[in-house]
Amino acid sequence: MKILGIYWGMCSTSSLFVDGNIIHAVSEERFTRRKNEDRFPAESIKSCLLSAKIKPSSLNGVAIASMRQPFFDTLIHKYSSFSIQDYIREQKEYWYPKLIEKKEANLYAVFADRVDKAQYPTNYWDTALSRSGTGFDIDREGIVADFLGGVEIPVQRIEHHRSHAAYGYYMSPFRNDTALVFTIDGWGDGLNATINIFEPGKEVQRVFSTTTANIGRIYRYMTLLLGMKPNEHEYKIMGLAPYGKGSIVENAYRVFVETLYVDGLDFKWKQQPTDSYFWFRDRLEGCRFDGIAAGLQQWTEELLCQWVKNAVSHFGIGTVVLSGGVAMNVKAMGKIASLPEVKRFFVAGTGSDESLALGATFCLAEDLAGGKEKLTGGKENSCSLYLGSWNTSEEEQAFLRGVRNDPAYEVVDKTTFEFIAELLAAPPLGRGLVLGRCAGAMEFGQRALGNRSIIADPINPAVVPRINQMIKNRDFWMPFAPVVLDSYSEKYLINPKRITSPHMTVGFETTSEGWKAMPAACHPADHTARAQILYHQDNPALYGLLQAFAEKTGRGAILNTSFNLHGYPIVNTIADGWDVFTKSGLDGLLLADSLVLKKRTQASGFEV
Image (cartoon, rainbow, N blue to C red; front, side, top):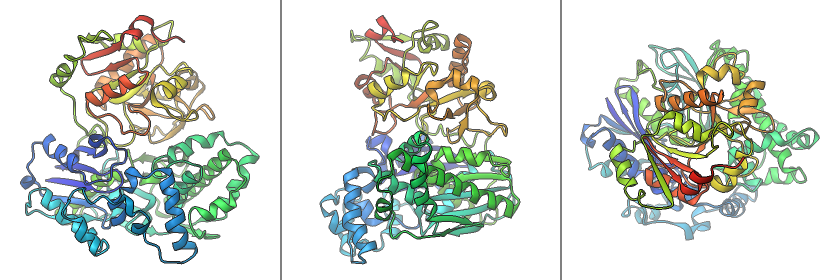
């Protein structure tokens, strides 16, 4: 069975499902180079079909994630083009009149200057505007069918939270076991949280859903309140939170705790805010920024832990999976993992909306099979997120022909793991270089997993400001993350349940040995680590590099951060990697077979 999955919205994405597994998935932003690209995913569709040499006529069906999609958000490219000032303008000119003054408000009228009728399909938007976008939800089916050449195959919309749940379960290690699957996000098809039971041989049961789990929405607009970009910078608030200590947290925390609370399986209001921005702005006035972040994070962790704890006790199922945008909060996921009621735990690799394209394919496969039983089987590493394209050796050598004669660079061919380990290792064991690695299959989602990563020795905290200032242009308080060899994970991470974390989705407390070995890859305020625990079968080449680094240094981890400049998508091609390499302070560009070094780096190395 072959199914194409499409999500057309915030971070538009396509995926290809073949006989029980996702074999290719990529977001449109990797081609257009616009963060959170929300245009029709034309290039990612082409990439999926090309990857398996499949013609549209060979597909068994197409799954479009989400029954509904906001028309005007799509028309004005809200998610890929809005600035912080645009989001504030939306609050003042649309949401304030609508929610607080109870007046008529029109998003199109507010942002008429941002309308893009030249986007695909160009012959559609005038007609759609004449009916104020009515019918866009269903029209997407025809638009997709036309793009694929008008082939007569099922094109079916799949409900938002059903897609989140299916993605979380089928791409987890528990896909052939009974599991309790939670989804929670800002909003999707009228819901913001569900609980589902997946059980072998039985139809999936949605045992709970709600519209009042407003954690994601509140977190989003607190991001804006603190002067950062919603739908993109929530992770910055999470990174800031551990710096808030003591009494400065209390006033902010009290504001949040007087809103939502958990009652059994449901979320209820103590005091329901009139909106998610102005109501909080008035009550948080005078609270310090780190206190707001810390209070918000504490409240989030407490609500999620209580909700999961209650559900596990109620249904008697200790195997838990989390999906949806709120599952991207790794600190909260770490707290859930430590609950004694939770016996086995997995967090979907990228729970935000781009993963809907993947989840929708599993749902359509269920439907085409009769909808009576869940899918079983699947390959051993079915949860892998190395789902993008490869740069071939031929492409690598063709690109390097234009570099070899440039006096500013040196090309090293046939590199070994031992050679790269020596370059990475901090003095006196090595040269302490910072490298961008662009090799193997590109990772799917918001987190680089070694193949499109910037890597360094995690022993020296001085590397953090160096990467932040010279390469990533990141905020100073944001931590990096480690890739940890499986053989070192018990030495470095407090993980008594041996929870797998192949995608950096769980925040772990570190041991004293772990903190000593990788302080540059941990959060400096609380010593936690958003670790990728690496097994050989997941990525043999990266594993070999880490093994060589461990033999050289005695440290079984490297620092990892996504290979991109701040505000841009993770690199896709060698050309993308080269662009970041030449525009930043990176010392080298590591490809599958070769390494490019800047001559100044070759001569002097990294001064510690």
